[in-house]
Image 1 (cartoon, rainbow, N blue to C red):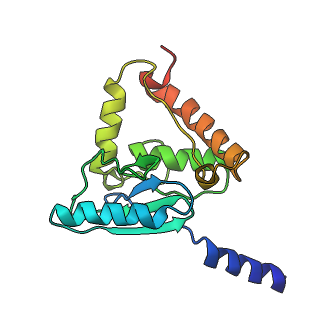
Image 2: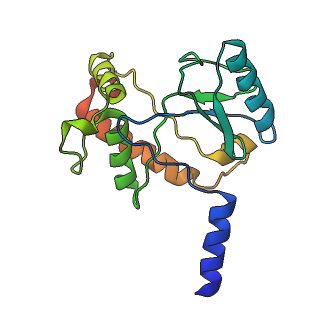
Length: 186
């Protein structure tokens, strides 16, 4: 078991989990980019922020992924850097053991609904409430769920965890259909 512990520690050193998102806490922006372009993307984001009178904290936790903490709201909501393949504003980070549990955590973190653990109102933050209200009023069939894994940024044909990610997306879609017309077929 000692060798297993060493392997787990080594894996944590290579790819530490990003910090979990908490209700009413900051929500980082994630950008995907081509593998090995992370520092170019970070430089582009930092140049934009400094030109607009502020600064952001940008790091690359994984190949092909850049995390930006913009506490001063320097970046516009739909900021689209040249070197970014996709942007994911106001991201939430969750953890759980099973596909269904991960799906419940995502729904709870994004929309403030569906969690048995969050009985108090403070668990639903302003952003979650706004997203919940927008989904309630959205047109039927307008919700689209995209499942991404870091290997997709490296052009892997069968990225690690893609199947699991797709299963989580399917479960989220199934849960959302029960709550929001936007998740149902048009």
